[in-house]
Length: 77
Image 1: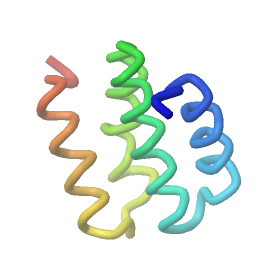
Image 2: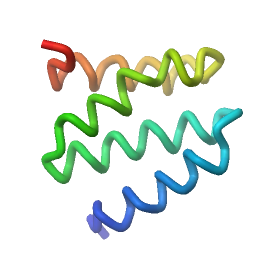
Image 3: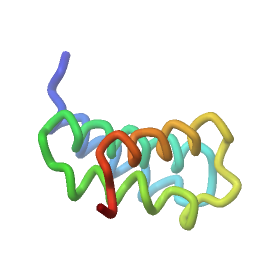
């Protein structure tokens, strides 16, 4: 539906609810993507950059997608 504001709220709730598992990592990634689509680079970067620290055991594919998005957005530069 491309309602990224609503999506961001839903993914933030999912991230809070599932902080200890792969679902939390996936929610954090999708929250970052929603923020990116809303033009909120700082918030998107915060989500992507915090992924390895918050979810060190996240699925490799999700962690890699977050790393790639952080690179595309030039987070930390």
